[in-house]
Image (cartoon, rainbow, N blue to C red; front, side):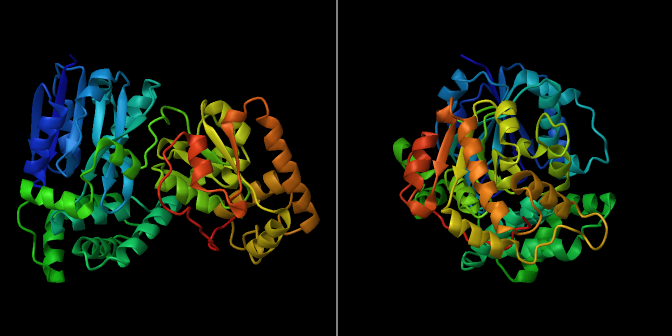
Length: 469
């Protein structure tokens, strides 16, 4: 049997006692290292890396995670250096966080990482940043698995407030803002649940008190004091704090949330595909206005963390240069829209085993949609350099061969692009799905391609007019 150590970190979360007992049962660790009230989180990370582990693997977990599945058999079989676990998060759906299965040589590599005290990414995500640098230094890959784990259910209001101030600060890049905006709309529709009301208040607090130009020391000081800030702000909201959490509360949670399922039911409820491992990704390589945003949402329902049309400055610099990887794919499991369409042959070579989905649409409908879509969307900045306009210009030139709407040119570009994609994948048809939601394609076709259970819900339809493409 493998030696498995558990690092259990608690800052008096409401679920702490129950989470620890569930971890003992479902991880069955050989040894437990308990960190209680070690703040800030960066200090807890530092202290956990100083331990001389006599183990094959270390499972790092936080007390806001309720592990409801026996994962010891998986731990016995796994030999990969790092597994990030997909969980069901109350506020953000199916995400990977909270439970990290880490081979001991990676733990030692993390200990050896040299960090700058002014590294903003470390300040916001100390464990993730350290691990990323260690993985990169050793050319190791991050892998993903899904388990029946609940995250951030039934937490104290003060802790929810603190978490979502931090979440807002972590979500200030364009693609992250977009994802947070979607979640906020979901919370607004469910404000009878005070958890969501508190999360919304936290988002507003962060936006009102921490500007985009806030300096390092100001932001660090706020993060270090979030616990006290959370207590005060909950009092201002006039919300009474929750009582302690017990196993009886867990039973009630399972009943209310419908999360106590058989293994088969769990796999169909938590739509996570366990086959996308290592470098393999999913790329939606359809042209704009062919259903790429609906595809992104559908893949999200299936558990894939996909970014639609990334247009951040780092991605712009990489795709216009001699890139050997994309930084954004260290966080996401794929890209959709013309950011991927422009470079799909390179993505195929750099991320072996990946799947490519070509969304299509009747051409005349597409041309009409593109005319509306490009209206009043210039490519030239009136106020100096603008990387979002520059990436728009680059992608339009690369994919369409024009900056402004030209029906004849776009008609040729559409036919030429579809033909080129089919030609490229003709000897590896298993890599490509031609996907037409306008003629009835949906989850059945998508899930067959991804070797994935078909969810019992309608395929999403998104008609976004906000894109910068």
